[in-house]
Image (cartoon, rainbow, N blue to C red; front, side, top):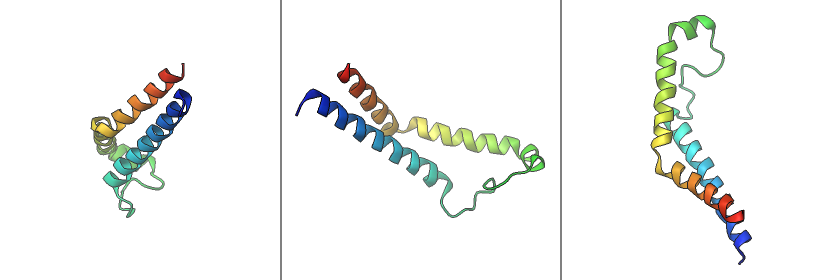
Length: 86
């Protein structure tokens, strides 16, 4: 196995881990049942009325994603594979 092949496998594995982690964190947090009150079309009146709640929900989701070790492991794996390729 050459260094280039190792770099390619590391990149693909890290990318797959990142995608899976984001899907699990995103869908796992909101659920797939469609009970999200902000799904579908949201009118300006609804958005104005619940703006703080919408922003708070989005902030909590971003914090959960950024705190995940799997996200950082996959980002480090992608960066390592790019550095190996150079």
